[in-house]
Length: 639
Ligand code: PMP
Image (cartoon, rainbow, N blue to C red; front, side, top):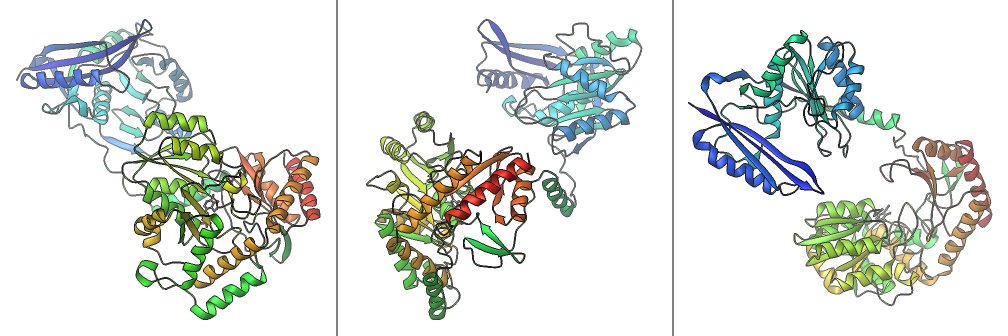
C-alpha cells in the first residue's frame, strides 16, 4: 500500500522574530491524510505556546520500497530523585557503552541549548560533525507502524514519538548513542538510548523550571561516512514497529527501602525531626531528661494549661462524663459542655453561633472543604498554615495563592477571576513569622467582590487585641470577618478547634463539614478545660496585657544583643537561614537550659530556617532578657 509522509510546521512572528510553535509528522495511508492534516492544523492554531500565523503542511508520497521498517528499542526506566542523580546515570550509561570521557561529552551538552536540531558529536575526539552547527541535525521521516490513522494529532503521544525517534537514530550507521533532555521547563524526564542498552528513560534529568534542553547523537565511525549517517537521519523514511504508547509499569520496589532512603536523606539534609519528651505540664518552665528548661516553644500563651481551675474543670468533667464522648455529635448527641462551650466562644468572638471541631487542623480542613464547593474559588495567602492548605486541597474549589499579606496582589487576582462564589482565607497571626494579616483591607475586598472572608485565629485568640479577642479587636473593627476559625489548643489550654460566625454559616457547616460529621467529638475533659480557660481569659484580661508586654521586653532584649526582629503577636521569629545552623543553635540552647524549636523546611521556605520563640504571660521579664542574650550568643557561636 502506498503511504504518505505528512509534516506540519507552525510558527508565529513576534517583534519581527519567527518563533517555532509546533511541529508534527506522520507516515499515513491516503484515507487518513485529510483527517490528520485537519487535526495538525487545529493544534497549530490552538497551541499553548500561541496561535500560529504560519503553518506549513507538506505531504509526500512514500513508496513501499523507500520505507525501512525497524523494531522499537526496548524501554526501561531509571527513577532519579534529582538532576544530579540523573546526570550520574548518564555518565554510567556512557561508560557502559564504552565512552570513557563522559564528563567532557556532558560539557558539550550546553552548546546544544540554542540549537533546533541535534549535535552530531564524534564520541572520541569530541569534534562536532554537523555541517551547520546552528541548525544541527534533524531526524525526520518516521512514524510508529500502524500509526494511529484514525486518531487525531491533538492526542499526540510524546512518549511514543520519542521512542520512534530514538529507535531510528540508534539504527543510523555509526551512531553509538543518543542523549536527550527536553527544553520544556515543565518536563524533567529525559533519556539516553543506544542499540546496546535500549531506550533508558531517566525520570529526572533537570530541575523543574529549567528551560534548557538539547540532543546529542554520538558518532563513532570513519569520517567519510558522516554524510551517509546524516542522510539516513534526515531522509530515510522509517516505520518503527512495536513502539509502546506508555511506559511499562515500574517494577515493584522494596517499600521499606524507599522509606529508609527518604529518612536518610532528611537526616543528611538536617531536616530530620525528633520529639523531646517533656516530663511536666507545658508551663513557662518544664522538665525534660531530668533537667529544668525555660519553655520558649509552647503555644500555651497565657500559661493556663496547668492553671488549678483548668485542671479541676477537666478532672470534674472526666468524673462526671468519663473518658470520651462516644461518637460524632450527629449520631451520638452532644454533652451540655459542647453547647456551653460553643455559646461561650460565640460570646467571646461576638458572633451569632459557633461550631466545635476536634482540632484546629480539622476545623480548617472541614470549613474550607465545605465552603470550597465545585463552583468556588479560594484565595489563600502564600504563608497560610498547613491546615488551610490541606483544606484547600480537599475542597473541590480552585485555589489561588496571593503574595503574603499583599492586598494589591489579592485584588488583581480576584479581578482576573471574578468568581461567582469565593472565599478569601488568611492566618490572622502568621504562625512562623508572628505578623498579622491586614484584616480591614481583607474584609473590604471581600465585600467589594461579594466573597466570604475567613481568618484563622489560632495564634490570635488570647494574644492580640486589648482583651485577647483577636484580630478584629486588634484593628478596632466593630465587625468580624464572615468566618472566624480558631483553636482551643493554644491560649485556651486544651485541644479542639472552632468556627464562629452567622447562624447560617454554622448550620451549613454542621451539615457539610466532613471532619465534623465523621469524627468522634472531643472528650469531656477537653471541653471543660477549654471552657474554663475561656472563662479565665474573659475575667482576667490583664493576662493578655502581660503577654504583650513580655513579648516587647523579649524583642527589645534581642535588639540590645544585636538581633533584629519584630512581631505583632507572641511569636518571635529569629531568622538563622541555614537549616543545620538553626538546628545546632537550638541544640546549644537546649544544653544551656532553653527549649525552643528550630523551624525548617518544609514548614518554612528552604534557607529561611529560624528559631521560633513563643512567649508566655507567665514568663518573667528577667528570664526573657537572659534568654534573649543566650539566643543571640548561640547564633553568633554557630555562624
Ligand atoms: N492554624 C494555625 C495557624 C496553627 O498554627 C495551628 C497549630 N499549629 C492550627 C491551625 C491547627 O490547630 P490545632 O493544633 O488545634 O490542630
